[in-house]
Length: 220
Image 1 (cartoon, one colour):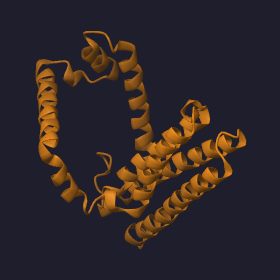
Image 2 (cartoon, one colour; image 1 turned 90 degrees about the vertical axis):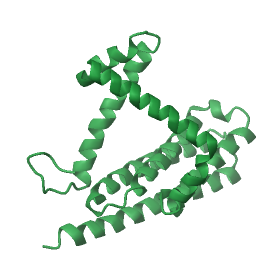
Image 3 (cartoon, rainbow, N blue to C red; image 1 turned 30 degrees about the vertical axis):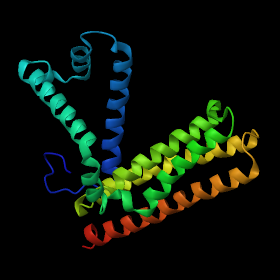
C-alpha cells in the first residue's frame, strides 16, 4: 500500500505501524461513541457524524449500510446451514494451520480451562491481563499470517510486532499471578513455557520476514 503521491512505494513495517496506530485511534474513538450512544435511537447517524463518515449520512449511504447488514445476515444464515465445511477447506492453507497460531489459540483454550479449575482466578486483574493479551496476540497472529502477498511483508511484520507486545504483556500478567500466589508453581511453569514458546516463535518469524524484505526490496 502506498500514498497517492507515491504509487510505486512499498510500505515497510514502520509505514504499516503508523497506519495501524491511526486505525487504533479511530477504533478507540468509535468504541467510546458506541458506549456513549448505545441506547440512542439515532445512534448510527450520531456516530457517523462524530467519526466524519459523512458519506453514510445521505440516502445512498443509508441504503448501502442496509445492504451490508442484509448480506451479513445472509452470511450468518449460510454458516448456520453448513458453511463450516467450506470454511474448513478454505483454512487448509490459511493462518489456522500455522503452528505459531495454533500454539497461541491452544493457549487461550488452556487459560479458559485454568479459570475453571482455579476458583475466582478470573476476578484477578492480572488474570484478566493475561487472558486478554493472549487473545489479542492470537488475533494479531491471525492478521499477520492470513496474507501471503509479498508486497505486504511490512504489514505482516507490523502485526507480528503487535502480537509480540501482547505476549510480553501476558507474560507480565502471568508473573504477577505467581507473585500473588494465585497459581501454583506447576501451573505457572506450564504457562510460562507456553508463553515464551510463542514469544520466541514470533521473534524468529519476524527475523525471517525482515530477511525476506531485505532480499526483495533492498537488494539494489
